Length: 79
Image (cartoon, rainbow, N blue to C red; front, top):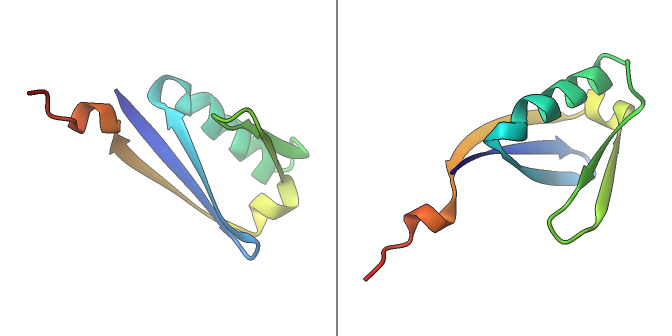
């Protein structure tokens, strides 16, 4: 399975989101809405169950990169 990695670089640090390919467009659209001021924040639930809130002002003052990477399970060699 292919995933996308979104990294948000801000003065508070680098925040990494690993997004499955099938949910990427939805997440991308929600982040864009925050940057454009249509929403006040972007909420992300992490794999460990914790929730991270990214206020729109923070996203507007951040550098956001999107990387394509392969799931580590596919890189394992079976013997």
